[in-house]
Length: 104
Figure (tube, rainbow, N blue to C red):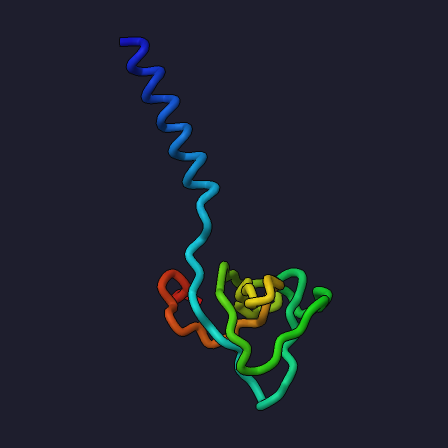
């Protein structure tokens, strides 16, 4: 009986570890704004955060995460096809398949 309990504990911990390491499902999206405009890609979800990257209106991205910020905006954590990642203000991102992101 003790062995069965220990085996179940090990299996449960292993499963939880695998779930924590599993990649988050990404939602396809693209950047919106004035044609040809640059979109700041920030290091954290805030208008005062540094902007080490930028995207161009129309760039396709994958939304990885979303949050609301103290600055009153909602933000998307996006990944570009180049692998660059960062935070973009929500009104500048058009999420094409908002499963899991529809609260934003």
